Image 1: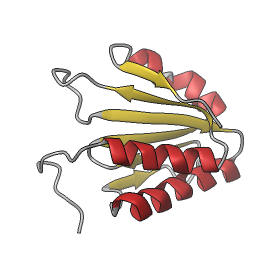
Image 2 (image 1 turned 90 degrees about the vertical axis):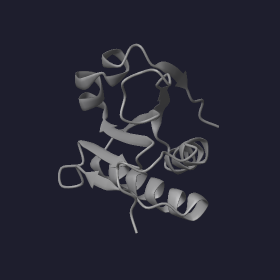
Image 3 (image 1 turned 45 degrees about the horizontal axis):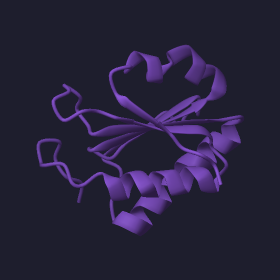
Length: 126
């Protein structure tokens, strides 16, 4: 059963790692983790952002993230959206929000700059 938004946030590190594993398994492009400082007015601990080169890849990345987080952490998303167009898929795990973009949408919305106060960690592909 999904948690309510008002429940305390779990340790987000295992979820972040599972998300990244799912992304990297499907060859996501330029994954980054935006970590928000504890005193920051964000509704979550972190964003994990990546992009893909096609609708098929975007959907595959999103599906892999959901499967990997469920397998490794036992968590299901609280909310998902964007699967209809697969230009920007958002998957909300309370403490971590996943953003999977098509490359043109990622450049347009530029979340890394919008949330410029966050600590940005680039993730190297294996």
